Amino acid sequence: MEREEILFTKEHSWARIEDEETVSIGISEFAVDELGEITYVELPSIGQEVSQMEVIASVESLRDTMDIYSPVSGEVIEINEMLIDDPSLINEDPYGNGWIAVIRLHDPDELNRLMPKEEYEDYIETIREEGAEEEEF
Image (cartoon, rainbow, N blue to C red; front, top):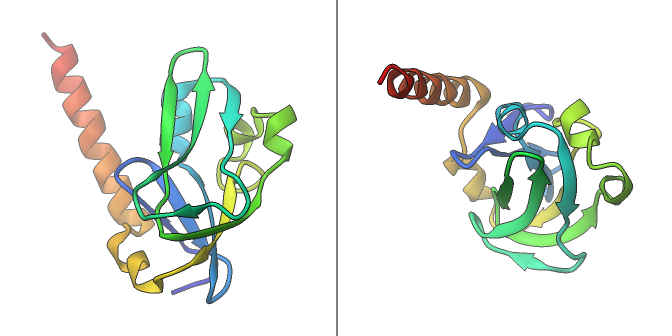
């Protein structure tokens, strides 16, 4: 797996492998587009233990609030404190400066349960198609 490869969940969170033990996590560009301008981020705590698909953080926008599910199990070892003063970093760069936390993995095999970019893009396309069908009524 390439170092820069980002893996996704159906709940629109992502994991980027940083090294053998750690991943950065955040929310996808699709989620950011759906939320609009993000105005507040509730970050996890350093040292917090999380399980895969457990709520780890949340973001608020003018439109909605979204829970962020951890794509992996592990220990939060770093949080993006820049988001406290500037939550719009998520809007500007969801896969870069808009990262939310770094997690030390408990079980690297959990990464196999996540979707590679191409599969996630297909999933998003399905969501968009279903949304378009609903709007026809």
